[in-house]
Amino acid sequence: MDGSLFIQYFVSGLTYGSIYAAVAIGFNIIYNATGIINFAQGEFAMLGGMIASSLARSCPLWLAIAAAVVATAVVGVAIERLLLRRVSRFGVLKMIIATIGISIVLRELALAAWGESVRTVPFFTGNEVSSISFLGANFSPQVLWIVGAIALVAVALTLYFKLTLTGKAMRGCSASRDGASLCGISPGRMVAIAFGMSAAIGAFAGCVVAPLTQTHYAIGSTLSVKGFTVAAFGGLGNSVAAIAAGFLLGMLESFSIVVVPEAYKDVVTIVVLLTVLVAKPTGLFGSRAAGALKEY
Image (cartoon, rainbow, N blue to C red; front, side):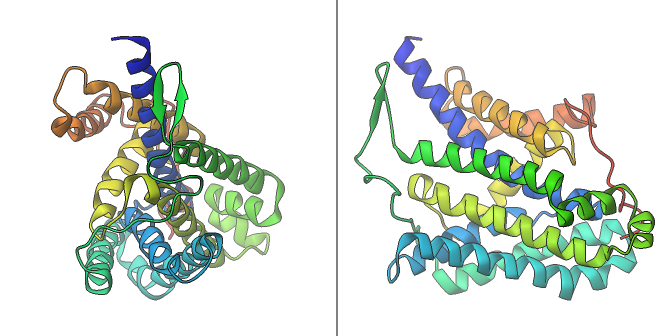
């Protein structure tokens, strides 16, 4: 493999790894708050991209993305308030099953609203033929936007949980719901905020990647599988580890093309997931137990 081809594969792995990491972070936020796996997380990315693609036709791109993120966050909060909170008394397993049902409903609603056509969002810089040359490799400027945006989200989340009162309250609820309640923190409010945040992050990721990968109504299920794989790979509940695991999975997928046909690239994800679940269920970097697991 020559150097330019190596750089090309590396950039591709970095790009898709950033996308997977963003979805995995959404998984981890909800897992830490409730102890459940939200298999509708990929649909939030789909909704963000689809809404932004529609709004970008009639308003500035930045406004379309902001509106898509806010609208998807509202959907996330509504799902938790109106559906999952009512199901929570039946146990964690039924809540997880409910998220699968919610994923199907969101996908069918998207099909009804936007049809089967593939949609896109305008490139943030340049257009589809613009490219950056580096050591003989060529890639779209949108790659820099994707990696930079996901890095910004990771830094912002770290600062949010460490420096803000709401972030510290969410961490407190994750450690002990009873203890947080005794301190005057509303666990229900923190869970609603967690769903809104995870939906907003998913939507933002969907908007950033849509110019490069395009989007359609059924893309959410694939992103959910990849995001869950990364979350499990890094350790459920550990968002910092999810970033490293996302990049690692992206690289594995990208460089796997060297030995297997591209059509079988997704097999790598399934193999990684099964290997982690069997060999090291806590993930490569260890899983943080969700304090709400038995109480939500």
